[in-house]
Image 1 (tube, rainbow, N blue to C red):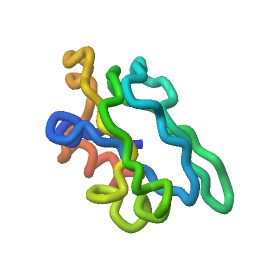
Image 2: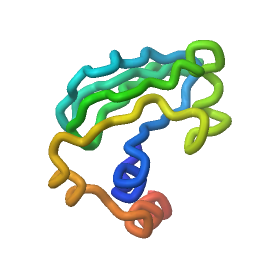
Image 3: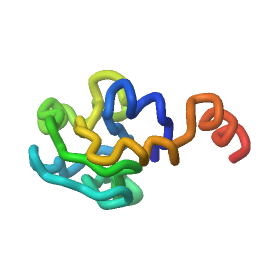
Image 4: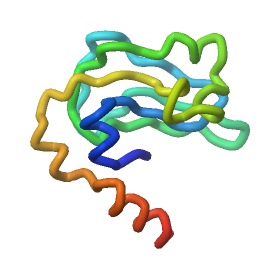
Length: 107
């Protein structure tokens, strides 16, 4: 669950680990917190919820043939979808990289 403001401002991409997934439709609109996709691993299925509201502008079709990209390259070739933000004020609720790294260390 990415909650890093800088990632969304620069890329508006979401990536999560999993073996199988369901990609959203291009031009589909989602509200903050709404499930945009799901990922499946050996042990569990997880929902991918958007931390911002937006419209899907592109999906990573490469995941259909190589779903392991999300594990191998989550911040590069393993992205799930590109989102056009519909409410940029929601970015104010996201952590910056330093806050996110601190959060991860506290877990």
